Length: 191
Image (cartoon, rainbow, N blue to C red):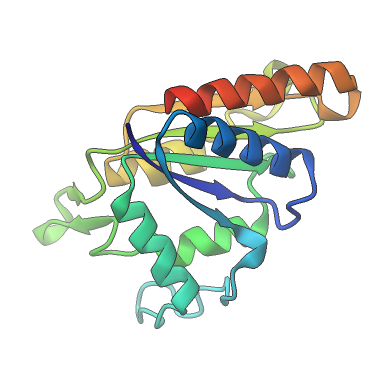
């Protein structure tokens, strides 16, 4: 059994992204995994990193809890919509505030590399989009690179599996139900 942390990166839980997070959580709990979940729309925090890393802002209690849940977890699951080839701004703001030096990484002396402080964890990234994933990738590049490479892997979280779902606006209800069942199976397996 695994310790699994789920982050729903869409502010509205009553969306297809919310249904995907529900399905993954349902499957994981049914299999006996220990699960913690954050719905980003429920958090109270300032998403703006006002002074960059020149001054570390005091974390709001909700962000402290996110850090605690990440440190607790063995497997992280991020579910969010792709907006303009990126994650929603509120999710980016949360990552800017949470993925701090001395929490996620530590630069070595003279900036000669860094220590990855979140190793020993793996992750699943699930994104939804209104375009065809392969076409979007050809036209705009890998829209998950920012989260997968520059955040998760940078801090030691590996491997990271990616599930791209789209074009959402053209999926039939039956196709959506099949995808939801697939996420529930992933949850059962803790993958």
